[in-house]
Amino acid sequence: MAKARAIQEALRDRVITQNRFAEVKTVAGVDVGFDKHGAVTRAAVAVLRFPSLELCERAVARTPTRFPYVPGYLSFREVPAVLKALRKLKARPDLILCDGQGLAHPRRFGLACHLGVLVDIPSVGVAKSRLVGEHDEPPREKRKLGAAA
DNA sequence: GCGACAG
DNA sequence: ATCTTGTCGC
Image (cartoon, rainbow, N blue to C red; front, top):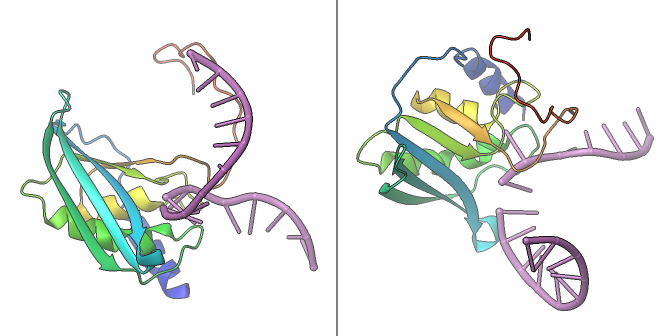
């Protein structure tokens, strides 16, 4: 696990938070599942035209599972299969949405960051539940533009 | 030592 | 993630 930690720390410095004002014409959605009782990792990616959301292309890839699920290190388990699926695409998507956390990670380097850095494509983590931290319920009303942080 | 813990 | 019955809400 120390090795994974070292890789994580190194790649983290390549995360860019700035808006690069890229025009998003295609968005990729990625999710991972497992076959053979966890022995095989299976990643699927669907690329949609934005904002019409019509399907452009899709790809599925399988790789032998070589890393256990360890909170904080999920990317090491799922990223290999995702990279393989992305390599099958004809065109690189402009943005990637993936299951799991991105910056909301104890070391600010969740699955979305890890993937985004490796393929150099802006990515957003869309987790279904919380890894760490807590928050108050956001105000129902939208904050005024330009209001103080 | 105990509890929490993306997927 | 994966399995899986009963239950809840629209």
